[in-house]
Image (tube, rainbow, N blue to C red; front, side):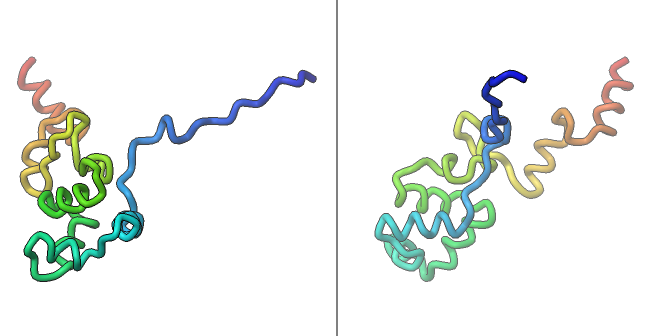
Length: 118
């Protein structure tokens, strides 16, 4: 038997980036001296609930305001909502329409296109 060190798998290197948990975003805001309500009032919004929608869904304006308060780019907080170059990914109906012919999204459409081009 050898005494070689066993290498542990680095799961973080292979896993895709994940969005921050909403409570982590709120905790970071509190550490920076902000509450959702105070941040909303700073930007002229009626309540913090309009900003809190960005925690769970795609709301570009809210994402930008929260990220600015933390001194970050929104892509650092929500990497699944942005491309690697920092551009916003289309969401909802536009996202479906935009990604319809992307590889791997709809295999049946891909097979149909390959058949039609042959």
